[in-house]
Image: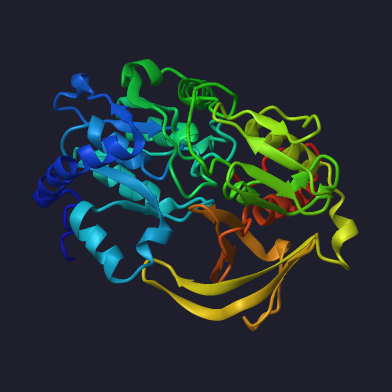
Length: 401
């Protein structure tokens, strides 16, 4: 039997040290973030868990720790041909299939821990849309206990103000990223998984969606429509943003996104003072929505390019500007051969990056890339609301993220 090659290689440390030298001033300039060095690291390996606010969070962690660290990363970065091969060679991230139970990823984490590596995971699995630390899968506690590494809880504060998930640009503000607490193995070995999960959730919880702080930009509301599809006056709707304002296309009401993240109606009293309040109201609306009313006529229609993802290899475009229709029980996509993807046949659905939509059937993975204003969130929320109903969980509040 061929001997298994080690996951941890000497070149990883060399490459990461060089990357830190190059990236530290770049990251500091772009995000105005103070990445506090973890002075207590020593020569120990850790399981680093962090709340996920910006696309650069993994770099913040890398700047706070020394030596090679191994990130658990979405399968999407491993499906880009040569670039993916380069990443594997340089830093050997640990691949995981998003929004699924990936036993292979667990085995790889155990392997890296056994070799003495530090493992980094964002247990939310997604960047926050609301500014609040979102749902954390209970499986993270069981994995932490199995790995047996000290757990470093890494808090990122101010990231939602500087670059919310739905935005393309950054705002002038300030951030902080640091290890807030270490939970030692002797502390958590006597805890139940539920008790450890509570410690992790409490330690990583940040509510950046509320107002406060100053974050300056002339495009503060730009692409907020990637995150909202509910109008308190119209119900399901679409939105368009320009500069610091976003407008409902049905009732034409305009809302200003302030430098302090406060939402203000133009000429009327908008009922939600922050993006977090609007997001929560939208989720509550979806949880109460009667999906059976949308089996004949679609809830939404979009156009987007559609790709077939060959896991850990590449992506192949199979349709250009395809018509996509979201119903209460299915997603119809023209030009992909199978017509309708019924929610009962989907293993999972998730949003990648700002607004890419991945749909996982038993045999295939479809990736949908719309335009700048494409809202992938509404598809994921609808799929999971339907799955909650099918399970008889009429009070189910988990909507996929």
